[in-house]
Every structure is written in C-alpha cells, then in structure tokens.
Length: 393
Image (cartoon, rainbow, N blue to C red; front, side):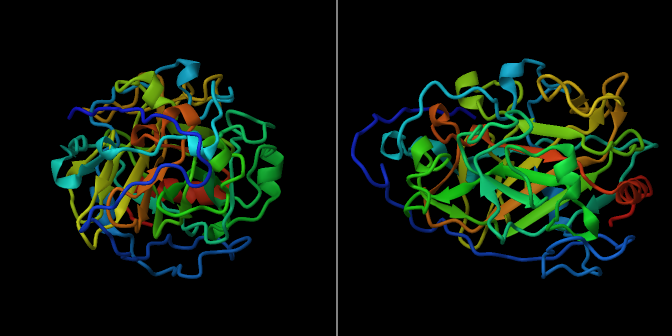
C-alpha cells in the first residue's frame, strides 16, 4: 500500500492552527468489555480501575488484533537514532500555529487498508496462555512530555505528551527506586509503567495550547482518553517463557519513522478498527465505519538476552521473534510478550491525530510505546505460570 506524505505550508497565525472538515459516516461508539487476572496476591496498592472484576473473562476480541508490522524482520535495528523517543531535541520547535495539520493523504478507509499478517503456527512446546494487567484508562489524567527511559532527567524530553497507566510517579526523574516506592492504578500491585503518545481531537482546542509537549511543540487539539486499554502478556509459538527481570525496560515502534523513511526498520505502527478484523494500516489513520472504535496496537519484543535490563539504544537487549516461525533469535529467551491495544471513540471523519516530535508532522507511522516492568516477583511468576500452562488469566 503506497502512502503519500505531503508537507502543508506553515502559517504564522495564532490559535488552533490548520483545521479541516470532517467526512460524514466515520464516527465510532464505545464498546466496553472487562478482562482481568485471577487474583493471587493481597489487595492492590493505590487507585484501581473501579470497573475491574476478578471474575471478568478475558476479551477474546483482543486476540484478533492484527500483527503490528507484517513486513518487520525478526530483529530490530541496533541504530541508536532509531530509538522510540530519542533524548536529542528536534531540529525545530515550532509553535502550534506553525505545525501543519494532517492532510487527506494521512487517512485511509479501513476497507482499503492492508491485510494483517497471519500469526506463526504454534509448535509442540508453545506457550499459549495469556495474562492481563488491569490498570484503567488513565482516568486520573497522568500525563507529561517526559521520557525517563531515553531522556532521563530532561523535562519535555519527548516534545509530545504521553498518557500513563500503572505507576503513579512516572516522569523525567523516575528511577528504579522511585518507581518501586510509588502507588499504581493497576490491580494486584503491578507498579509497572505503561505509556504512549496521546491521541487528540484536532477540531477542538486543547487546554495545553501554550504548554511544552502540546501547542508549543505543534501538538494541537483536545486530548482523547481511550475508551478501553488492554495490557495483555502473551506466550511464544515455539517455547515456554521465562520471567522478565524487575525494571526491564522495553520500547517498541519508532517515534522518528517519518523522517527515517517509510521502511524505517523499527516502525511497528498498527492502526485498525474494532469491528473490521483482518485489516490494518501501518502508515495512515483508519476511517472506521459508524459504531466502530479506532484501535492502535503496540506489540513489544518478546525475546530477551537473559542478562540486561536495558541497552545503549534501548533495543538490543530485547528482540522480536521471527515473524514466520515465531522463534526467538539464537541465544535469547522468550519472555511474556506485551501487547497494548488502545481503543478510542474519535470524532467523525479526518479529525484526529497522534502527538509527535514537531518534524514528524503527526504521522500515524510514528506510533510507539514504552514499558518498564515493576511487577512484584510473585505476580510475574504467576503470569509466567498462566502463559506456560495455556490459561487465560
């Protein structure tokens, strides 16, 4: 599927910046379902999602979410410049009015999107279970434009706003110690931090028009809270999984995929619609039929070198399994593979866009996601048992 990137001429007017008319018939309505883990631990620490129920079944629709990037190879690039949210400041830092709005070429009718890649066939030693961490939808509005993984100690190091669920303390100054001591929105004491760039309604003015990460970095519009957040840990088609070490850091996707080119090796954006299985766009925002939610899916590396909790480029200590066989690269171990699925009710038409670095022009291909494991060891062991025994917890 070809995609044309057009740069809109920058203007100097103040206010919301470039807006465009919505096309009728592409709205979406919320469909809420519950899915939680069996509780092996005492009561959770900190706020929890009030809709959570220990007996809710896992949502089977999540398993049909398309693969993040059918063309991706098994091992991501080790180029530090491809990291998800680099610490280097962008070359330009335009005001909101100077940031071009996405154009018609940035959207695609989901019926015209590509087909999702088939999942690898499971082998005799497959770990076919799953574990879901229930952490809410960021109802408490925990957001900032920091990224402690790749820009530690740097305020506005991401130049775009992040939504957080899980750990309540996450910001530029987060450390292993501060994360371990903080509260959480997750059940079962999961203090992990899960975060991603916000999605915005670009037809409405946001409340951060004059703030870093928002309008000052060209990200205009009203922030949308996801209708549903699924944090699912899955197994490996060819082997059992081992426990993740505490404080393991993993990133997925490429926040600079637009300027790195359409074949950027670390790009793993996957946009789809809740009621249109089998269709996925990796470079454009989908226009969904009425009644369907826009979905963005981030699949994380599911293989680990068995030693390091991080690496210089935040990638080479982990890797993706082979896209055909599902096997981890030689010398690596399978770990629970995190898949984050975010479902949104968006306004009708070409009316929403992702936060990005200014020079990335809010392109859908730049979608990315970050995770640091701060599960109690007991909870991680429970998740591993569920996954290896084929249970859905």
